[in-house]
Image: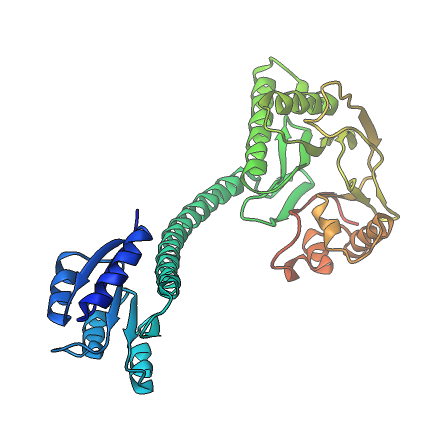
Length: 390
């Protein structure tokens, strides 16, 4: 839509020539012969720009400019005058005139150029204002969204904490854990529970990624082991006692969920009567560390992560444990805070920390300096299964 321009000049010849020229340039034109007439036109028809002469009978052009800027501060005004007085130029520009042209204007294209610049300035200012308002609305909505998201995450964090086990003592075997999430919601998960009178089940899992989607997989994992426990107590299935079968179930259910998530997992069953450990590995790293009175070492074992391959096969390992031991389970986040460049060096430090702490969780947590990291690059989970004294 063509811009509307008001031309104010008491000289009808000059006024008509400007109106005719700008009309040929496709502007919508309004005209006034003096200040009073101009103010009346402005009140009835708001133009997009004003071209104003300074020397007019009645109200002087500078006074009119001042009134226009008071009532319509964003309206562009181009001042035209034959006076050529520098004080008028300075005062007009200080009052907010967009340009000052000296009569006679030999080439009216100069006036058109000045008019276009003034209209472009207003257009840009309007676009900038609209953009700022849009940003303010967007930022308000974003803040509200972030507040809602944080509230949801806090609720999810509380739900996730409730899924984690309390410290457990079964006969002379005890279990405890610590988790330091990189975000409010953790992709690390672990559990331990009694199964019958002489079996202890425990596992640790590390879901790919971080945040809500990874935390949701931990819910699936908890639900799966709950169903397996229920089936065991009903006598309909003893899959829970077979680590390799449990990992196969986890693998199938993750693939069926189509969440595009996978996890690494170490799953074990400890027979308290024989002190024998049965376990299976689903790509978990680092492997658990066994601490006894004579040695500190990683358990043996390997296997594919769960949720990546439909034909994944899991092996069951059997190990006779010493009479007294500490078994430490880690997620790979613990390696991220060990300041060594190679994985071999990180493993060496991890073994050293386990040995120095003698498998005590609180001591290990302190020696590793986990509590010194407000933010960690990956979730850190550590669990211990202990028997006797070492």
